[in-house]
Amino acid sequence: MMPLTLPGGTGIEARHFTSMVFALALAGTALVAHTVGSWLTYTRGPTGWSDSRERVPVTLGAMELKVPANMMRRVEERVAGGPVDRLSLAVLWPSMDGYSELNARAFADPSDTSAVILVALEPTLTADIMDTSERLTQVWLSLASGDPLPGPAGLALLPLPGDPASGTDFVAHRSEEGHLFAARCFTPRDKALAATCERSIRLGDGLFATYRFRQVQLEHWQKLDDSIASLVAGLSPKPAS
Image (cartoon, rainbow, N blue to C red; front, side, top):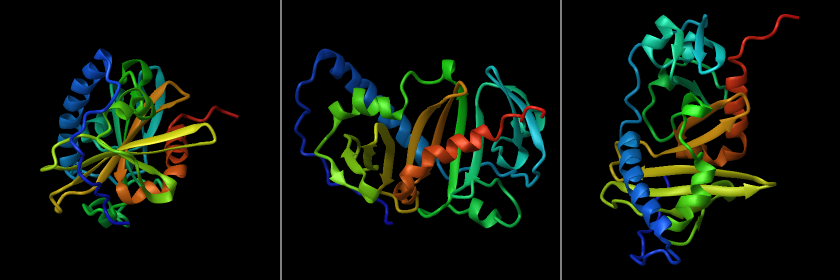
C-alpha cells in the first residue's frame, strides 16, 4: 500500500463551533505541531539494540513486569531495570518479536513498508486524559478540514488541518461491532521520511499504550489492538502453579 495523501482542505471553517471547540482547535493545532515533529524523527531509533531474551524486571506504576531485553528500546532501562515512568518497546509485525541477529535488517528498515512497531507504556493515571478514539469523537471530528475519504480495509480517512508544506495529517477510523478504531496518521511531503500512524489505547491492567506503525499496516487494523494487548499481557510474570 502506498502512503496515503489526502486532498487539501477547502478553507471553510468547521460548522457549529462552540467556544469550547474553538479552545480545542487551538490545542489541536499545538498537538499537530508536536505530533508532526515526533513523526519526522520516527526513524531515529536507538543504536544499541540487544539480542538477549533475558527478562529484565521493571516496575511501571503498580505493575511488576518482566520484559525481554531485546524488546527494550532504551539502553538505560534495559541495563538498570527497576522503576520507570514510561517503558519504550520495539517489535516486528506481525510476529511481535524483539530484536535478533536474524531480523536486524528488518529493525533497521526506515522505509514505508517497515514492520517495526514502537510501543510506549505508561500507568493510566499519568497518561494523557484521552485515548485516540476519544480524541476522534471529542476533538477531531470538529476540526476536520473536509469530508472523510475511503481508506484501506473499510477505514474512513478524516482530513485534519495542518501545514501542507510538511505533509498530510488525517485520522483513519472505523466503528465495528461497538468497537471504535482510530489512528492519527501523517504522510510527510519529504519522501525520505516514513508515512506513519499512531494509536493509544487503555489496557485492562491499568496501563496506557501508545503504538506507532507504518501506514501500510492500516489494512490490519482489526488485529492491531489485540496484538498489542497480548504483547503486554505476556510481560506480566506468570503465577506459580
